[in-house]
Amino acid sequence: MSFLDRFKIQPKHKSPDPEVRIAYVQELPPGAPGEEDAAALVALAREDSDPRVRRAALARIDDVAVLAGMAGSDADSGIREEITGRLAGIAASDSAERAPLALGALSDQKQIATVAKTSPVEAVRADAVARLTDMKSLSSVARHAADPKTAALAAERVTDQAELLNIAAKTEHKDAGVSALERAAAGAALDRATLDGLSERAKSKAVAKRARAMVQAIDDAEAARRTALEQHQQRVAGAIARIEALAVSTTMAGAEQQLDEAEAAWRDLTASPAHEIAGADRARFDAFVSALREALPADVTVVLRGSAVIGVRWEDGAPFDADGPGTSDIDLTLVGGDMLKLWDDDAFYIPKLHTAPLNDDTPHSCPSLVPLRRALCKIAGRPVNIQATSSFVQYARDVLFDQPYFKLIDAGENEEGAQEKEEERSLADVASGHADAPTRANEAADSGVLAERRRGSTDDARA
Picture 1: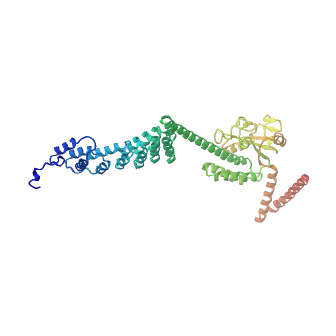
Picture 2: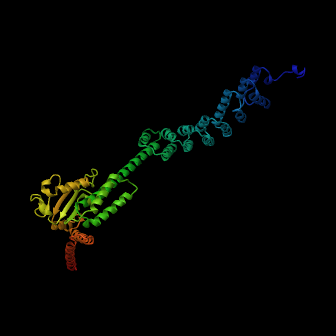
Picture 3: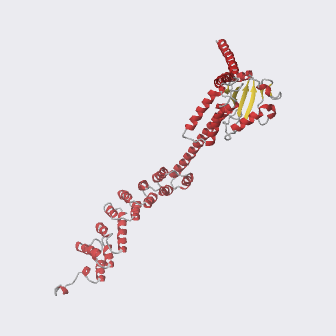
């Protein structure tokens, strides 16, 4: 500086005294400063060493670009906060030109969320939502934005289930709330308690209604699941009851076809992926099959009647095993032979033709079959009732009254099966050199001839 320069009057904004520089800023007239003063203010705001001067200069600057450039560069954190606060206010203003520039300078998620919630300019609100990355800030916009479209835009960007449920419960906007609820449910299944709470406390009636619909859907799905499970259990119980009912025979010849059908039905059940069959039920079924395969034929016709056949009780129409597995009876009827002679004279519905059932309450009616009945009940795991009837009564119930039944063992088939087994045993004895083999083989051959003749005469009669 020259000697003469020392005597020149310095502008106040260049004074070495910070108080003078502050006074310069304060003495500027209201309104936009002139070009020279505007440049001086920018220089003070950017370069002055005293934060008081910089703060005073910034207070007179309205240029958004200047403020945006200094928002992150000032050494004083307090001044930086003041600048971003002013920018946030401008971003939330109704200035369609300055607001977008101010928003672009903001980085604080809470300030951006405030702009999204309060800006009167739709484009600024949408841009603010797009700039948000924090889930809580987006959730806050979805819950508190004055504009429903902005709330919906924010809700669509939320991915956290807890925040989605928070939006659904607290927003007053239909679209934002319902969308948040449905997206929360799509991410992970919502329990009934959560949905019940939303149906009672959600601010949006639409959300409450949707939550109630979801609760109803859960109830319907559970009812359908229980119904399917009950039906599956009934089918399992019916399949087991059917195979258990075959155990009334001591042979297999008369029930071969029925056993094949029962096994086929069981395979269909076990092949279904919808429901698992308990290991105990599988073992139980397999045990009956094994026992029946090894059994010998009986000399009477054995018929299965009642709810095990028609699927419901005749008294009240309740389904088979309606009170739980093993609660329904198996009703067996022994037709023909000498079965009627085993019952006590006082145990007949129709004297000499049709007996009352042998059950827990009537062990005296047919004492000789009580051990068999006990064994069948133990095998079946359910009550087994046994009756005897004449061929005439069976015919009447079948043809005249059309009462459903399932024939387990046919006496005629059993007799032929027994004859064939006897012949097989005789031939085996001959092959093995058994001492009685010739006699037994001759007897078997003779009986085979007689049986063949009986079959031939029967065929002739039918012809």
